[in-house]
Image (cartoon, rainbow, N blue to C red; front, top):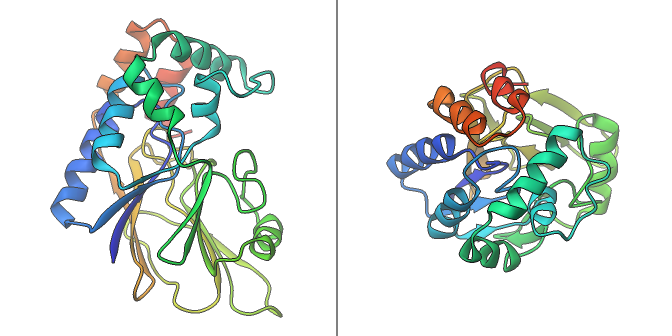
Length: 245
């Protein structure tokens, strides 16, 4: 099965629309979304409804739970907390119903482990270093896991139980052979990349051969930023889109 894997749209409608258009050209069998449909951005209802229409699997992220009032936001940054409270007020009944009915922060599909954050803590844990990745691989029953949450396109692998974990970033065009060993693979963020590349990030996965290809897709950053400013959200949330940080 050929799958497009998306995560962390964060209510960025221009980014999501452009990525879905590119996905359609590749004709995947399914589209999987790893959570955080909302938060930060200005188009929560449109993004949630488009994801519900186009994706075959939708996970819950911490910002989705925050928007539903089901997560304590005291540890959020001030900008993230303000955006979460704004999103709570803005959610339509239909978008709220979609978020309430999501599959949760983890799932298994085609033998692949799917986690918003990590196998060890699918809501909160950031997997950004080999030590954390190794511990998370120990917790996962799946040989290959897909993770989001950090907004950084990267991968970790351990060839066998005696091996150290290898790690690397994943620029657009990066191809992986994940047919052997344990893997944690992060497609990066569609709506708010934080790896220095402002283009929307996502990946393709073939679940038969376990080949992976990373994509970076240019989109109308100015339109997404203008919507944030117009909504009265913190200006930094608009400015950072162009920086990819």
